[in-house]
Image 1 (cartoon, helix red, strand yellow):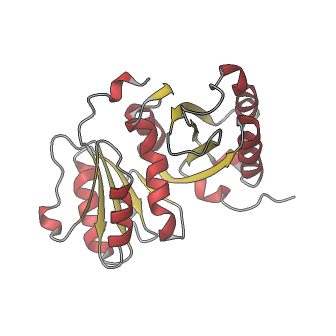
Image 2 (cartoon, rainbow, N blue to C red):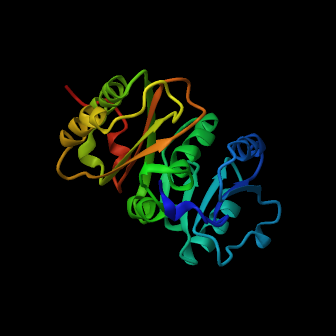
Length: 241
């Protein structure tokens, strides 16, 4: 269990700016993640960091000048700051999320924050997330699932095969299981995941975690991965050959 998270303050903020963003904010609220708040910045001049803030995610589809100004305030205060928009100004953020669909935002936010605010068998905390994403410029999130660790790992490996991982500086892999599954999770089952990590380019720094999630069905295993780096946008397409 990640004992560092037991007394976690509400220090992770998701801030929506502009029109059409209410649905995303409401979905983030419905995730019920401890230590995470979600809000619409109706008055950007009052949307400022406080002493407890560690992380800010700025989501917007328009009003980019306002959103970037808010982000810059958090960034300058030393708050780990992420931008969810193609119009995010890189100078105002530690990292910008690469994703074309606004519908995916809540699940990506969940992938970022769930490991650091819920109990873990193998820990991944805020400092790990900061190591991966602070001043990384860009990141993306990929997820998959399977009936067991081997199947989920094979699906994750297929995703990796379609990416040029030599453009990735940091990569984290997060495994989720239902603690009430019919058969307890055994560390010996991790062999396939460890094999996948051993096959990654030596230039990639890898961090991983094992987390419980009671919302998973039966013996389902879910995996998500965060890929970050200053040129990670180059790895998005299918590799040549």
